[in-house]
Image 1 (cartoon, rainbow, N blue to C red):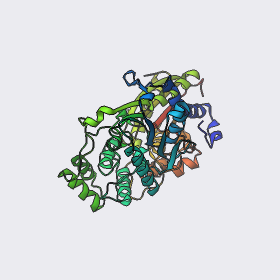
Image 2 (spheres, rainbow, N blue to C red):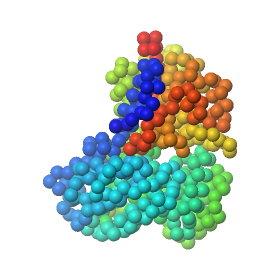
Image 3 (cartoon, helix red, strand yellow):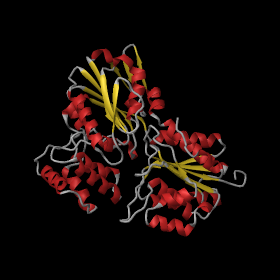
Image 4 (cartoon, one colour):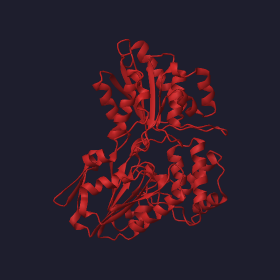
Length: 453
């Protein structure tokens, strides 16, 4: 399902090949086709959804609804919609999703958008999603497919703002190293679809949101900026983020947010809003899905897997130093796990870009930093963004070991945020193209011993 364009490059050692196999297994396990087929079913007119957590399982009697609409957006939204068509079939009346990786859905229209910077065609697609939701009535069911990447792929600037305003503020937020929570606090308050506003548009229809989570902690209000979820943040919070990072954004953005703080504009949907009584959400898959698959591959190959965390965050290069320190401890002392071992983590790291930065992304910086800092050669560091797009590049991530990276050159590249050229020279770049999923980052460190070298 996931194609590695340059797979032969990682057959140079068994450890490199194992690292790649763990990454691929994680991406494939988190693909909507696999997850939706496992968690969504229809029998005797009953739509059954088995979420990732027991309390998210539910049944919906499709015969009770006059029409069934499918709407949504994200990197995986096309594959999500196509698989739903295969399972729900004739129950779907119509639908539209916005994605950067169309999958060939037939009843549901797949409109093109762009990620990670919003585009004009994304605005066009978001307008169609809102128009479809607005036509739903109280006898209708709206199935919302929400996946990672939805924040950028569903740009719907409020009337006072332009697409250019959204692009500028998004680029500034991505450059400054802000967390996804902070980024989304701003994006929600500049949007006509985020922060529960898609659910508000669809009300009074029944809204059932099917979610592929790409955020730490699986907060529904953060995934794709929560188009059908309540938003606890405020206009004041959004202004605080701009001030905290001293961001230069358009006067239109700051003026709109300031007006919102004064009550001129309506707030996003809050947790106590009555419209949420007809909104249900089910998390079908997350970064944990990918981690579990990687762990299984490591175990099958005779390595002891150890999951460090599914919630890693902060600067990519700093996170790498902590990861390799644990890997070195394993190699030298056998603690906390004896080699041969595979250390696995998920989550989302960030990069604070230098003004004159080069090319790369958080996963490439993680691998380069890890390879540079390692004092043990028999360890391979690997990291990818599961959607196949690391930062603003067209690569998924990288796999490398210390001997392959000149240490001084590596540190210089990190200082100017220019990891990709050096990793490319070392034949360490992982290229997948769009993978059809997005459950955030997946990292693997293979810790060898004499018998596994």
